[in-house]
Length: 354
Ligand code: SF4
Ligand code: FES
Image (tube, rainbow, N blue to C red; front, side):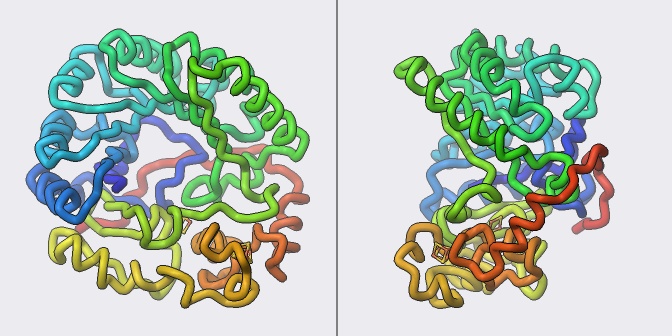
């Protein structure tokens, strides 16, 4: 379960997957409400909790939230930019039971990293936080979101992760949801960059075997088949937004006509098993052709519903990334677009309260 504790964040990354319409601080759940949701999640069978945002460190009660999650017997992964964390606070989080920290990386030098994050001085602070994490002995994953502006720095990115003592690096090519979708043409890497990135990852995996795990999320517009988004809708994961709305995926609210429920008013188990949004695209019954008769239908589950919505305006269509989709030309047309040179930086424009 991904718990988006807050949409507040000191950074302004244009690749953010948060929705364009965000929840204001006044709409955020209380500590007690989150603790209740964590307990319900554990009872439902959730094993891993990802504390995310926005920036989860923007919540003053983060240590209490970690403690509540561990009390519920959940494995706690903290997903953070590092801004708002000090060594003292990290030690408190460690004592509260955080199991793993996933630190975002915007670039390998202050110039590019602070430009992407829209936050001057962010890179230096992040490096201090990374060193504190490994000194304390917490397992560290670096999450490097890669795109047109930093993919050429991939060898240095992998080297930096190793120097910082990360056990794992996620080389995650940007996925176009939320704010990232607004910035698609500025962020889309070129075909040549992607081919070189694959080569670099393969070489680094050989060189660093037994030292550091390298996960690679390719940019799916260049792929032949779509990703199994969320491992299949309503199959293995759920998201809870800052105001307690429970979603099958982080971008589900972009799909018109779905009804979402709130975990402060409806039991999480009821939402998961019987909720209309969770059942909308669960399994294979909803599928159109060519998915319905495809032998990959239980491999990728027809791809990403939000991507079909974003590109085609139809959430119940085959993901147009798929080579078998009659709509694949729509993706190819996007790939041949002239890149934009401007970013639309993420900013909190609160329009949704509780
Ligand atoms: Fe996946 Fe549907 Fe494409 Fe088959 S047709 S590969 S199930 S997206
Ligand atoms: Fe919603 Fe992929 S992001 S299904």
